[in-house]
Length: 223
Image 1 (tube, rainbow, N blue to C red):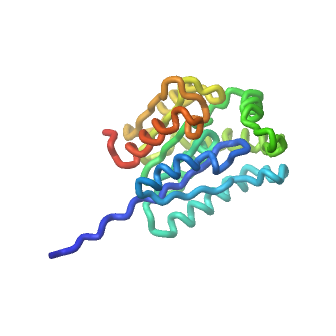
Image 2 (tube, rainbow, N blue to C red):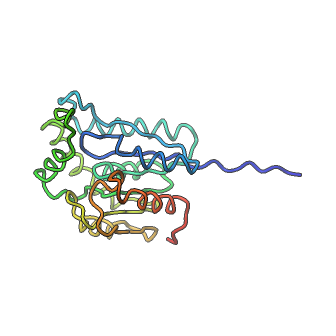
C-alpha cells in the first residue's frame, strides 16, 4: 500500500498595526490558527521604548527580513496585515511569492492623525501610559502608508479585505476604494456589521473575524 505524505499547511506571517500593542494584536488570531494546525509568525516592527526608532524604510526592511526567513523554510506563505500592517502586507505581496493576502481594517486612508492619536490614548492601561509611539514614530506611520498604499495596484495573489462598519479610526470606505483597485477578480471584500477598529482583539467580534479568515485561507470562498 502506497503511503501519501500530507501536504504541510502554509505558514501564516502577520504584520501588526500602529500603536502600543504591536505584534500582540495578533495573539488571539494566531492562537486560533494554531488550534487549526497552522504555524504562525509574529514580530514587532518598531521599538516602543526607543522613540527615535522612526525610520519608515527601516521598518519595511525589518518586515522584508522576516519574509526572507519565512520563505527560506520552503513553505507556502499566507500574509495577514492589520491596519498599518495591512498596507505593509500589500507592499510585501508585490515583492514576494505569497499564496494569499488578508487585510484587516487596512489603513489605506487613515481618517486623520488626531483620530489615530485619540485611538491610541483610549487603549492605554493605567500602568503603561508612557508606552505609546512617539511623535517621530507617528510621522513614520504616515510615511509608510503614503509610500506603500499604491502597491494595491500590483497585487496578483487572492485577497480578502475585512473591515468593520463602525471602525472609528479607518473609514470602511477606504477599503471599498482600494478593493476596486486590485487588478484581478480573485478577491473578496467583507464588512462586519457594527465591528470597530480592533476587531481582532476586541473580545466581541474577533471570533467571527477568525472564522472568516480561516475559511478564506482554506479556500472555502469561491473567488
